[in-house]
Each structure stands twice: as structure tokens, then as C-alpha cells.
Length: 110
Image: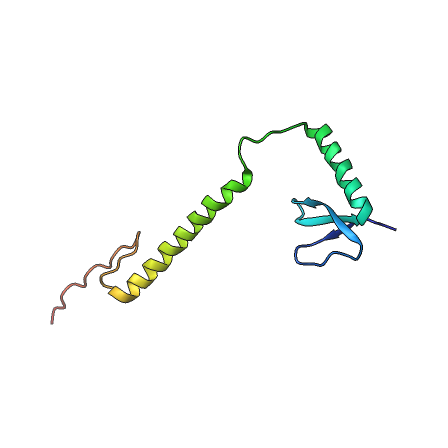
């Protein structure tokens, strides 16, 4: 009988189970029965401290989320604006970056 259960994102926790830790490499939550989940979390915390030692961070790693989100939003906004400006102004006035306009046709000899 295996008392350790893993839960994928969006799934419900099994009855009487609590989250001991999150396995970020597998994107799963590791769960144990309610009184044992705290003990399992403590044992894992001590093991990780013994294995890696104390690694103090000089900044909050979650702080990188906001600048990345803003950069993505600005990029998407630029793409949308370029598409809308091309539709509103007309294709002859809108030239996207990297676009080489076609050469004019030589006059016909008729």
C-alpha cells in the first residue's frame, strides 16, 4: 500500500490528504495523509538543507514575474497595433519591418 500520492494541477486532493511539497520538475503536488504530510515536509526540508545547505537569495524570485508579464504584454500590444494600423491605414501606407516592397513593373511595349 502506497500512502504517497501525486496530484496534477487542476485535480482534487484525495480525501484526508494534504500537500507535503510541490515537485516543480514534474509539476505535481506530493501528498500524504493529513498528520503525516507535515512530518514528510519537515523530513524533506531537513534532507534538502543537508544536501544543499542554506542558499540565501538576494532577491525575491517571484519579482521577475511582473517585468516578464509586462514585456509580453507590450510585445503582444505592438503586434496587435501593427495589424490594426495596417488594416485602418491601408496596405499601401503600412510597411512592416523587414518587408521589401515589390519592384514596379516595366512599361509594356505595345
